[in-house]
Image 1: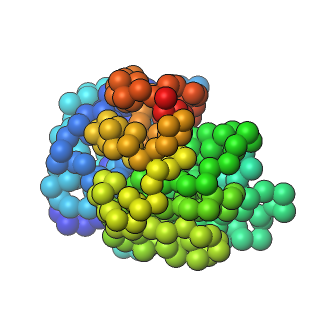
Image 2: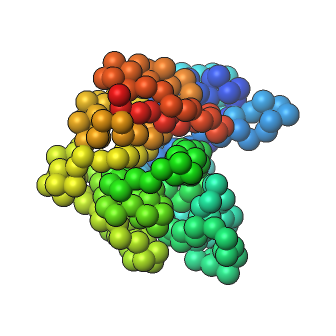
Image 3: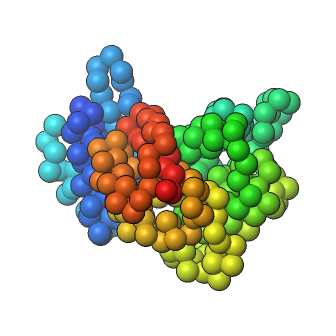
Length: 288
């Protein structure tokens, strides 16, 4: 692979695409790779993986991982020398998820008057509101706050900060977000200012940061990350929650749902609800 920016696209049957996505998740050399999986052609049953490697080694690793699935048609496309991320985001439509309306600067004039409007600028962070996992979390949260309010909310792997900002905008007195990616923390703070939301974000791995500890225990924890860290953090997330508190977990494929659910049930959680969107799952759990 050369050092030019590339996009790797793989198309094939859903089961094969989901298996390939699991292989990417399990590959430690590819843990930082950004990719998505979605249904491209419902009539023909075609699913698509889009991956954006940032180094030649990641590109080679992705090609090798996808090459293990001959039913996938995989191509490597060179990205034009342009701000392709900004161009892609500028074409994204706004998203409605329950009472929440998530939009970018290009759709500022389209925000309704009867919704909680969240202006989210993604930059290089995850969480524009378009991904099935983020939408699932917003729908799940919207359903929960019909019956209760959550005074203290933690967002693990906050990305753009959209979930913590949503909580702050709907009455949470304390909303804290963490992310292991420094640029994402900067972007989430900027989004909090854009939305005049009292949400704080810290650069941290896990739940050990002083700000996170000082605000505990929480009434609700969001964790929209990957399946392996969801499993690894099950004990810490339980410890951060009040008894009876809720956890909204996503970032996992439907095929990973059983593994993640088992980890939390073993810690004394009960399944409250599950949501599916495309290949993705969102779990709403309650600490016993």
